Image 1: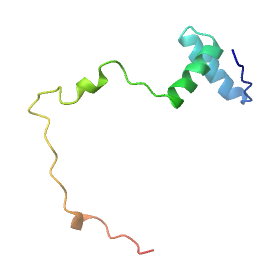
Image 2: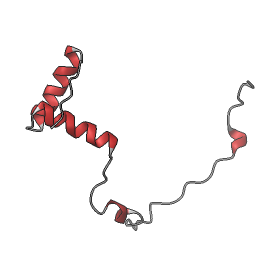
Image 3: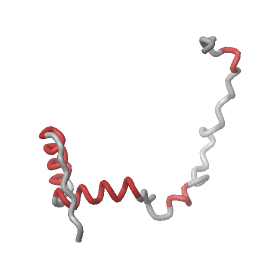
Length: 76
């Protein structure tokens, strides 16, 4: 398996060590998971089924605001 060397400051290293410790994994595994999540984001299984799954009358489309009430912007 390929290896990567990282150069990070002590403060960041302590944070990485703490995060790995809290998840009960090695630093190497924790860093690999973080990299994998950034380069190949994965949503939880059946995430797409959540869209429209809440039927609650308190959820409603907000009233669209009139842009005329906005603060005037400086012309560039």
